[in-house]
Length: 524
Image 1 (cartoon, one colour):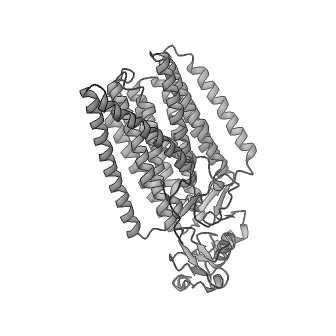
Image 2 (tube, rainbow, N blue to C red):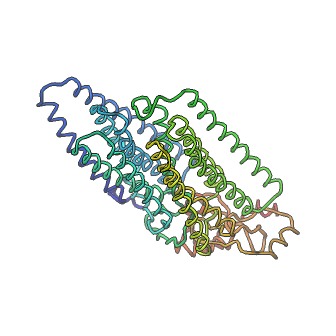
Image 3 (tube, rainbow, N blue to C red):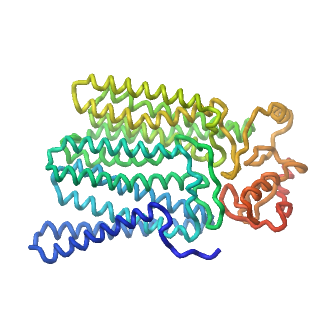
């Protein structure tokens, strides 16, 4: 496939280029100011610090890119997965770097040199992330915006709430009207960059969101899952709160110095969460292998555990905040532990198998409306209780916590309820759905027969006559002949794109020419 020339191919491309142009113009103006204005030592020290920091960051990120390329070559990673990994790093970097100055401005007081340093370094790091990891992906792939789901619209109110919270802080600052106006428009501009990069990160994060050039994108008409699109948001929130907890808390009167005992307990609790949940995951897989259950059973069980754990720890900060109020060390510790546990549950129990399933929301609309209604009532009641507190900071912290975590609570409870109602649907790698309906006869037959190797797409056991294992020559993965026919029919090409690794296998004369996996046939 001939490479296309690098060019802006996404909304983030255009937004970052616009920001880079404005920043370049301002930097040129600052250089002229340094040259022709009276010499001030602090200004030259600031310029040297910015230049040194940016060069160091560029070197580190260039090394990261080099190591990623080596790993991709060593593990023979497919082009789509390689591009996805790079864009995940790049878009995450853009998002985090565009968020840092929005928070830092309230933590550094009137130290304008420090603010200029943080803002400039953050923006330049944002550009480095983008042009190293994102720009030029159009040479091989394209973003399949049509594959995005309606659940991603939840990112918009998340950013609006964060923007509103920061504007509320603006109103309480002792600053001039011009400074307040500058803060408002600065927050608005950075919110737009954060929103765009986070949306495209969710598109790339979703299976089928990144496809090869020339491949016709498929429209995803059903919602994948509610929780996944909030994971990057809360991962970023965890990173920001951790920085506040460790460093920024020492330079502001609003955040008192963090107690090192509380910090040690927080780190220890996070490590304990990883160890306990990791061992629990190993135990579940071990029991599944011993009992020789279907892949669907393992996926369903892990999905239940994952969403249940996320729901519990998403509610935890909303309860704790009523007890601790604005006691910053304890409050931040509880929030960090909760978000870290949520992300651990997602990483261990949801993420590994999410390419095998999706949730069907079309049959559960009434249930979703009921859940949303209940959560709205709970949110209103929590806010009503919060305003009875005498301390104004306690009221603000409680309301902020209730609103932000209500998004995650609603999402995971909806996902959990849909799974309980039988809405878990196995998929063929993102190219179509295979519903797991009430197959009582099939289940009975499977109990009577010995369990053997099964197709990872349709979850049917292989056999020499009807469910014949076929090898995809380019990658070595095995699917049954029926699923191979479905894949080539849906993709409408003379090749099959493997649903597991995205490598393309050319199929001349149809799937009947794919070699059989005789090693699996011998095990039947």
